[in-house]
Length: 254
Image (cartoon, rainbow, N blue to C red; front, side, top):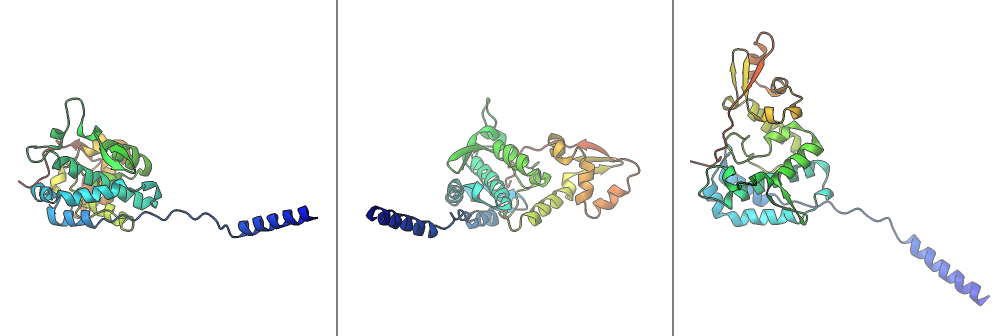
């Protein structure tokens, strides 16, 4: 009887313990403080042109932002926040890559080596690991999200590249921001030429043709505003496509 009572007490205690064990709560979403990066963009980027000299003098602020990114697990972020996180990481680490070699370079290509392009370097510290810029762009942003607007959000520190956006990307504003950078590029007369029935466009549309469904004209028409929209509609028959030379010179102030 004494043993039976003892067992009942144990079972009662165990039952009580189980009753008070609630469901395991999910991890709180990491919070990314973009203020340091936003400050740098506001002070040193004008219309996509970067003041690398001024940025170099505030490199410690960029380092602080990158150190923060290095400690964040992107998988803990909501989907759009994760997209924004990797886009900001790509752009911020590209700035760091340039500053590591600045001054004395004329192109991002000057930061590479004979046997290794700058985009293959494992430089981006994220969640305890190292990623290359290529891995961020192609293995994560392009492969996971399949949103062609990403090509106008990531910046390769070159004049031929879509301009560096003047504010951090955020999950809350992501669609608006991606639309903005895409429309800005498509409608910039410096980024295309329409001569007769031929539309001359960035080589981005050739290199990543599959992302644009092999239809750069259709993509242009989707985002074209006046006067480009009317010009495209006025072309009789099909619009042919040609590709402009790509300017790899540094997107810095002269």
